[in-house]
Each structure stands twice: as C-alpha cells, then as structure tokens.
Image 1 (spheres, rainbow, N blue to C red):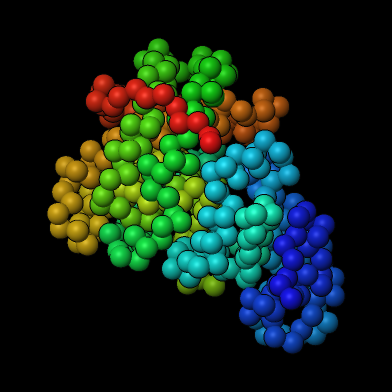
Image 2 (image 1 turned 45 degrees about the horizontal axis):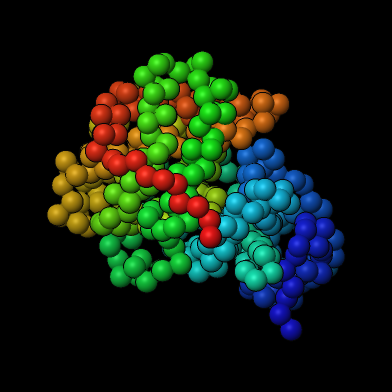
Length: 372
C-alpha cells in the first residue's frame, strides 16, 4: 500500500516518518517513537510550510538522522493557488526525488507527489547547522566569489547536455507558466512603487514601469540556447556555505523556480540583489570573467561578449523579483520590508551602473499571458 501524502503538518506523525524514512532507505530496523516539530522559514518561504522535526528512536541505528526538515505546500489559499498554477510543488518534489544527488541540494530522505490531489511532501536533510546567508546583510566578497565559482561548475556540468534536454518537465524561461511572471509583475507594479518608490531615483522608477510590459519578450530571449540548469531563486537566504558532512562548499535550498535557460541569469540575480553595491562594482567584471572561463571550456562557441550581454539583460530582467515581492509584502513584516528594500535598491542600482536600461527599447511590449 502506497504511503499517504500528508495534507497538513500534523499528519506528519512518528509512524508516518518511520515509513517514509524506511522507504527512502535512511532506516532499516529502527522506528521513530516520538517527534517534535519547530516551524521554520516564517515570512521567507511563503509558498511552503516548513518544519524542523527532531526524532526519537526505539533503538540506535547508524546513519539515522536526528533531525529532518519536512516541506509541505503553504496553507495560504492565494499562495498555494499561484504555486500550483505555476507547477512549483511538483517541480521541486521531482528535483529532490530524481536529481538531488547531482545538485548542491540537501539530501532527499523521501519525497512524493500527487498532482491530482494537490498533495506534495519533501523530507530532506536538516542543514540548519551550516552557516546560512543573510540577504538583508548581503554577502561578503569572499562568499560571493565562492558562489559564482561553484555555480560556474554546476552550469558547466549541465551545459547543453542531452540529459538536460530530456527533462521536459523542467521549464524553459519561455514556458507558459514562466511567462505568467509578466502578469504578476504588472499587477505588483503600482503597490511596489507606492511602498518603495520613494527610495528610488526617478530613472529607477521609470525602469520598473518600462520593464513590466516587456518581461515576456526578455524571458523569450534568455530562454534561447545555450541552456543549462538554472536554480532560478539564487538569493542569499537560499544559500548555506558548506554541508553537514563537509563534502561540498555550498548547499542550496528552494528549487521551486528552477528551469532551463542561459546561465548568467542565476549569476545576475545573485550579484544584483544579494551583495553590497560597492562590492559588486569592485568585482563583478572579474567574477564574470571567471564564470565565462569555466563555462566556455564546455562550450568554446560561447564568447565573452555573449556572456556579458546575457548578464546585462538578466540583471535587467531580475528586477521583477523585488517588484513582485514588494507588491505583496506585508508592511508589518519588518524583515520582509527591509529585504525588498535592499533587493530593489541593489537591483535597480546594478541596472543603472550597467546602463542595462538602454536594452529596454530592443524588447517589444506584450499583453500578459493569462491562465487558462
């Protein structure tokens, strides 16, 4: 009999966890006799409900985890509807189930999905003991350099691989569910400007207004080959520097927005929104040169000029992240507000530093793609 998928966190019982960890291979003889949950990620992982679960066993077993993290869909109807429409839950469950060992992801102990019933669950390694980035504070130059180097290696491994093309459930940036990001940007624009516009220059506010109706055109351009595996949400809060067993220098969480596209998209998102403006200005050219050197060994036809052009275009496009987040952020959530403020300031400053807004005229305005 197939193991049921929990609907809510209270369904994640000791008996259920025993069955899940046994099926996933983490347990062979021990049983979990009690568990205690601690909610984590409040105000950060708005599309998922996460709990750190401490486990007690009836006997000792080598390798049995003392804690795990369980991820379920959010109970918020609005957020859940958006994530379901865009396929986020199914995608992340499949990534953990099928690809986690090939990525810098936490170990997958158990994952399951039932699309028809809208049920999804991931039981993953708890990486809470590893140093996590803080996006409000911003990355140090050393951490940013490490991140770019490691992402270059990951992108190079997946660059134009036949195995990547076979992952037809992993959307390209021009897939319908990705293109719906333009509609979300346009809806969020006015409330974003109302809340955060006073912190921006007139030029920066104009960039946000001009960008919104061009998002689909930009995504269609960055979806063209050469393609690699994109994390899609490569921001500092989703990055842990190290791993629980010391086997890798980075661990990345939140794979819901992952897709296939041009590699500089990930790099542009991180450098434009997760690091202090002065540090980015001082090092971004050097770091991009290193990134290009790594991926061009895999694709000798991918020129430095093309890489830099992709980086500028992606920096411009990635302003959609603070716009969308800022449109819906609860002003009572102090960290959330400060996070959006920093993302917007860094993002739009990067765009003006790179004169990336001069690219806007090369992208056509389009009507947003609507569900259905």
